[in-house]
Amino acid sequence: MIKVICVKDYERVSDVAFETMKPFLKSGSVLGLATGSSPIGLYKRMIKDHNENGTSYKEIYTFNLDEYVGLPLEHSESYYTFMHKQLFDHIDIPEDHIHIPSGLGDLEANAKAYDAAMDKMTVDIQVLGIGSDGHIGFNEPDTPFTETTHVTGLTEQTRKDNARFFDPLGEEVPHEAITMGPANIMKAKNVLLVANGKNKAQAIHDMLNGEVTEKCPASILQRHPSVTVVVDEEAASLLDPSDYERR
Ligand code: F6R
Image 1: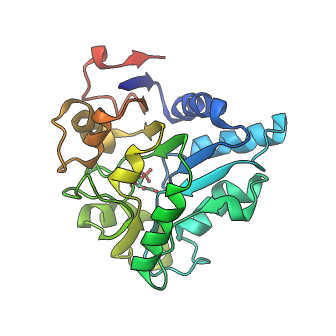
Image 2: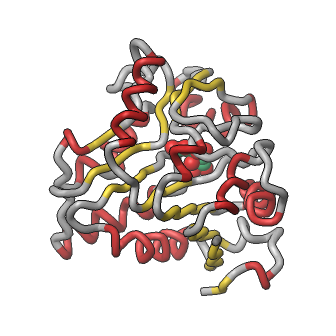
């Protein structure tokens, strides 16, 4: 079941995403987290809530979706660095509760180890962004829905979309990533997908109204029992108003 909530702008997307997340910010919870620009506002609100209301992450566990292959952890664009800068450095989560797939060393072994760690816990809520080509995690079009954690090539579209982070460094976007597969994502009890901006409108439309197909990886969410999609007006611009709740 997918519930779609459309709000005015990115700030409201982040507010509603935080409201959806809040019940899971408690002892024993397992959070699935994403990088990219979409969840930054949500993470800001989690930090504010930690500072102002004392919400503790000491007994919370996290699993990130993905990581670039070949970037040292300390690289400014590694997802390890991103997550620490945007969230982990500002809350009280123990470092050994944080799981991010490793894009260094023996990648096959890393993927297996990540699946094994995920098999020991169930993600209570998985945060997702969506690529303009409908990818979730780095599961690009044509990834089998049955895939678990694996190494994947990034499409030219995705590398173009992410060039905004690497261009200022005078560096190329990596060509590969290690990512949870659609099968891992579907095991989460709940999914929270956030999207904003015109360049997401087609992917949001296809995810919700297109057929369930590996051509649009996010369309698999139509088969998930509990998905909340929070979008701004631009990302919702190709939807029929009867498709969403307006807030
Ligand atoms: C990030 C991830 C990607 C992004 C997607 C959208 O961990 O897995 O699927 O969620 O590329 O990225 P943004 O939010 O930067 O538009």
